[in-house]
Image (cartoon, rainbow, N blue to C red; front, side, top):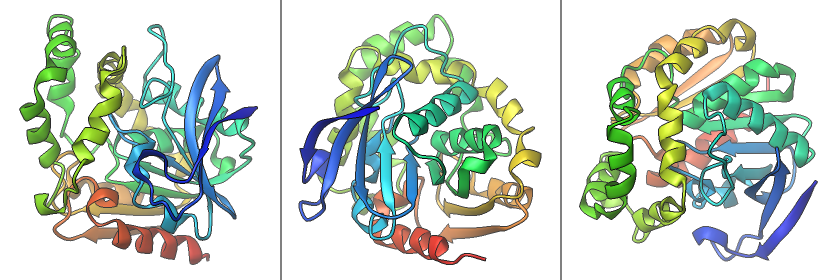
Length: 294
C-alpha cells in the first residue's frame, strides 16, 4: 500500500504547471518516497548514485504526457529511509525496486534507469523480464566501462571511508568540481542544481549508503555481465552523452549488441546527465522511442 505524504504542484523544483503527487510506500519496512504524475502506461524512473527523484524534475512534465511516471528515491537515497544493515549490491537494489513496484500496484512498466540506476534496471529486468515492456538505459554503468573501478576500491577502503563521510560534506568546492565534470557544457547548469543534489546528502547515513554501493561495485559488474541472455529480447533504448566522463561512451558499442532489438542515441556535446543538460531533447528521444512500437 502507499500513502500520500503531500500533494503538491511543484515538489523539488518541478514546474508549477504540472500536477505531481509526492507520495511514500512501505517497502521492507522502510518508507520509500516517490513522485507520480501523468496518466497512461507506467514509466518507472531510476536515478543514479547520489541522485534521487530530483534528477527528473525537468523531464517529468514531458514524459507524463503519455505515461504515468513514477520517480522514486531508492531506499537509502534522497528522502527514502534506509538501514545500516541493508544490502546495497545491485541485485539487492533491483529486488527492492521490484518490491516497490508491487507496493504501488505496478504489474509491468517501461523501465528507465540512469548510471548506477541503469545497472539496477538491467538487473531488475533479468529477475523479472515479463514485468518490463521497454528498457531505457541512460549512460548506464556496464561491464565494458572501466570508469569508477579504481575509485570504488579507494572509497570503500575501511580507512578512507570514515574520513570521506566525516569531511567531504563540507568541501563545497570539491562538490562543485566533480559536479561540473558531469556536464558537457557547464553553461547549462541551472541555478540551484548543485544545492538540490547536495541537500539530502546531509541526512544521516546518506554518504554511507553510497559507500555501501561501492563496496560490491566490481563484484556486481561481474554478475551484471552474466545477465544479458535473460534480457536480450527486451526492446531497448540506449542514450549516451558523447562527453560522458563517468561511464565511457565507447562502452555503448559493446552494450548495444547484447540486445536483439536496440537503438542507440548519442547526444553530441552532452555529458553524463542528459536529462539535466538538455531535458527537452531528452524527453523527445525517450517519448519518441515509447511511441514507436514494433
